[in-house]
Amino acid sequence: MKKFLTVLMSLSLVFGLAACSNGTTAGNSTSDSSGPESAAVSTAEEDAASTGQSGSTLVVYFSATGNTEQAANYIAQVTGGDLFELVPTQPYTSDDLNWTDDNSRVVREHDNPDQRNVELEQDTVENWDAYDTVYIGYPIWWGIAAWPVDTFVQSNDFTGKTVIPFCTSSSSGLGDSGRLLADLAGTGDWQQGQRFSSRVTLEEVQSWIDSMS
Image (tube, rainbow, N blue to C red; front, side, top):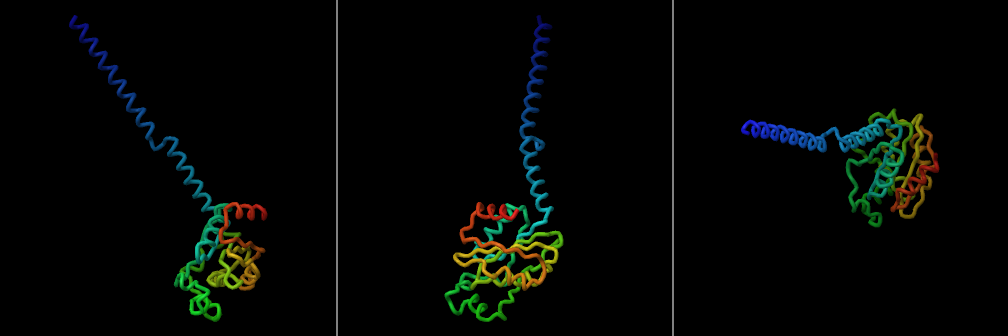
């Protein structure tokens, strides 16, 4: 009888350990870094890296109040392009942008073209030669492209590139802004371009991009 109980207890211990072992393995598999969730994250990271590396499209923009930045983000999203923001060494404040104040910075620069040479933190792009299509965005100031863009255009060779201007404004159209930038550049295949309202939407940008394909 004692032998029988000893054998029975031994068998119970073996089965109990086996059950615990199986439970631990299952628990580890749900939090394993090689599980489905981790694979999805890796795929997303690889896709993002692939988009950045393709780099055939570049979206360059200067944004004074954020509207052009929004349009640029949408264009980059639709085209898979890279973004490059033009940042003045001396940023424009809200007072600087007050065009109703005759003493504001933009008014002084508008009235004195020799003051429009706005220095940028960076006016050239790494791997510039890798891009064959360049979108250039800006707000419209007094019917022309905001002049911080001029510095970038003058600093780069657009030979062999398709250049597509775009702008944002509350009422003004694209006007001659694209043509004037093309004249300033002297190189590149400059396209007609597009004007967006200050409340540009992703759908509007998507429709525009689709119309060019």
